[in-house]
Amino acid sequence: MKEQFNIETEIPIDLLAGMEGVIKPAEIDKDIKGRWDIIKGCLAEAIADLIAMRKREGDFLARDIAKSLDYIEKNVDQINEEAIDLLPYYQERLKERISVLTEGTIEIDPERIAQEAAFLAIKSDISEEIIRVKSHIQQFHMLMNSEEPAGRKLNFLLQEINREFNTMGSKIGKANLSHIIVNVKSELEKIREQVQNVE
Image (cartoon, rainbow, N blue to C red):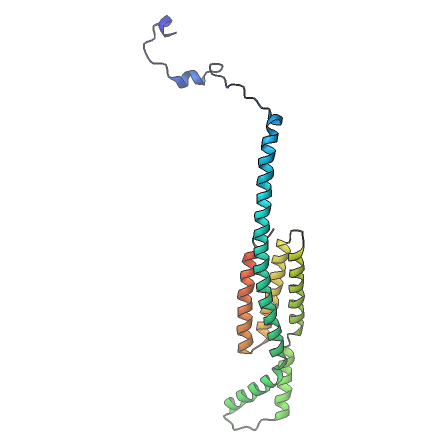
């Protein structure tokens, strides 16, 4: 064309490439069935490796979570044991407070102190929360041993367990029990982070 029409300028390749029909892609052999035997072996091996890796990771997570649950269960038992003796604790605390407020000028009626302490002990009763926490932990173990996906259910149970410990913390005014509850909640947070990796 340059010779025929005496064209002096260069003809850019993109001009030719952009014209329909000048450049055509080569036909590619799409014989997938013929190649499937090669692909199938690689794919099967990759899937087997993925499943094995997920199983190892799952076993590690399960052991780590189980260890944390054991720690929480021990602390629940300790909280339960110490919460039983709340009546004498509240009686002594009431006597001390009244004595400080009145500077020893008023004689304390032991019967009245016993009544008020009993009222505080009833108000601080955490037996229901203890029962529910133990039940939730038992359900947690069952879900972890299940073959079905349980990530959402485990997350929900963690929220319920956390709620029970919040209630215990607000009911009990005993400092050492409050410290135990704070430690348990910290452990629950660790479990919650791990559960995010569970389907």
